[in-house]
Image 1: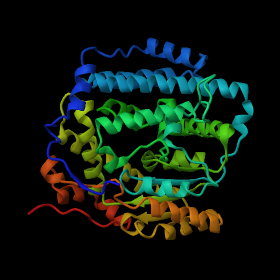
Image 2: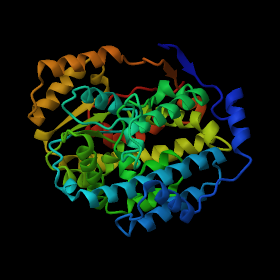
Image 3: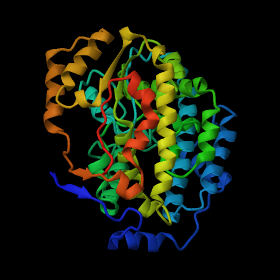
Length: 421
């Protein structure tokens, strides 16, 4: 266990490791082709199917790819990663449509009384959803499955019973730990970790997640104009298929995107019980953009900390404004508000409140499983990061925080970072 403190002094002008330099030298020599027809042909060949379902997905896919193409600062490594993502999304969508054609009863499966965690990145959502998933009576979405929710035809478990999708995710994680090893201290996406359903929302080419991978303000604007009720209904269809494949039908879900989509979320899951996590937006922004700036040493030709600070301060403001506006759409008897400063060390109290609101019995075996998870996953398990918003990004914490008075006025949130004198 690495419990050291990480401090980055090269975010704007990265000092690449030898491994990082070799990766970029190898990948930058050839421009990655993002031709939509070729990507679709590849997906069709993999899926053995050619029906995308909703005809409108083609236009959204074109907007998605156009947004990537408009980002001229991406390295070829990043373009290759995004190309693979588009092919993967298309292939899984094709496989989903084929599966439902074969088993139409999938769309009759009930997704019963899910627990849904809603909150900003870096506000305790990952910790809370992984804790909830420790109660194995509920279905959750591990990272390996979020990337490939539908198995490829004819590719079952190996002779040891290991799903090839898991093996591919494990290889990807091992490669990431070689190339950007400090990511684990900020957000370790190991294969078994419970992931956001925003990944399966993206199968409809209608989610906000692309914003984390590239500089795509055009996609943000396109996404915000969509009727998300339709796309959340498609996400539910994916959950129904996953339930059909390996159950159970009672889920635990989470995504920051839900902050600005509470209407569609509750229209899709009207019997959900929701845990809202709340944290100082300055700490959220500082943590998120530090993680992205570190990753950008391989993803981008140059790193621009000021752009990251400006964009994500605005993006978090939009998300939280919508959350404050629509919070009352989730009834008090079906929701809890969880302050970040009250979460660590009091997780079981939060779980008890959530289970009570959801009408779920917190059994002795479930309590034991939750305690075992907490004991095995203390905060800072992979080390901690020493952040410097003002020094590295040129942003005064106090000035940034003043933009979020509306949020502090609405919820029990404590300032965590002060400006330097």
